[in-house]
Length: 275
Image (cartoon, rainbow, N blue to C red; front, side, top):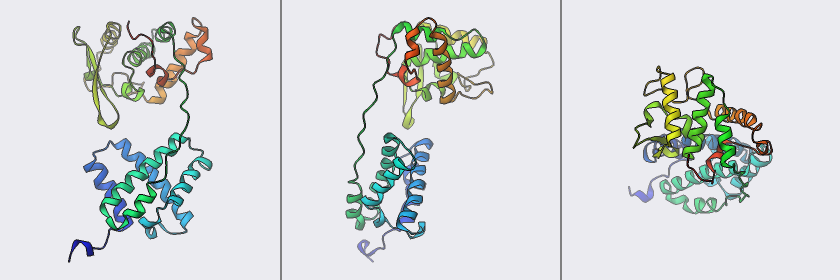
C-alpha cells in the first residue's frame, strides 16, 4: 500500500502525539511552556464542544476553521475577561498545533492554511514609569536589618544589577553565583531553558557575600533567596516585598507614591547601571 493511500491520523491522535512526543521530545520545550499550551488547548476543546455541539472525540481537524478559532478568542476576551496578551498567547498555542498537524496530515493542508490566517490582535503597550537612580537606591536601602530585610536587599540589587526577569532571579541557586573579584557574575536560567551569565557589581557582590556569611546553612543547591520555609521565593512574593519597600522609600522619595513600581519596571530601567 502506498503512503498516499494511508488513512490520515485522527484529531485525537494528532493532539496526543503533539503533547506526548512533539513538544516534549522534538521541541524539548520547558514544562512551563508545555503546561501553558495544554491549558490553552483544554480551554479551546471545552469551547469547541459547545460551539460545534460535538463531543471531544467527534471533533476533527477540519472543524478548526477561522470562524471557530475567532469565536474562541472572542470568548476569551468577552466571557473570561482575558487581556489581549493572553488572547494572543492562546492563539500562538493553537497555531503551533496547526503547523504540526499540517505536517502530519498533508491532506488537511488547506484547512490548516485557512486556520493559520487568523491574525494576532494588536494592542498598545503601556509606557513604563522609569525610576531615577536616587529612587532605585532608596528602594534598595528600604528593607530593615532583619533576616527577611537583608534577603530583600539582595533581591532588589539582583533585579537592578542584572535587568533580569523576576522569575530568573528567584530561581537563582547559591551555586549559580560566582563571587571572585575579577570574575564575579551570576548564571541565570531564563525562558526556554536559555542560560546566560551577567557580571555583578562590587556592591552586589558585597551584599551577597554578607548574606551568605549570615546564612552558612545554605549550600550550592539551596535557593539564594529562600522564603521562610526554605523554598525559593515566588514571583508574587517578590512583587509584594518590592511594593513594601517602595512604600517605605516614599518617605525619602515622595514621587514614588505616584508610580506603579513592579519588578518589570526595574527590568526596563534605562538610566546608568553603575554603582
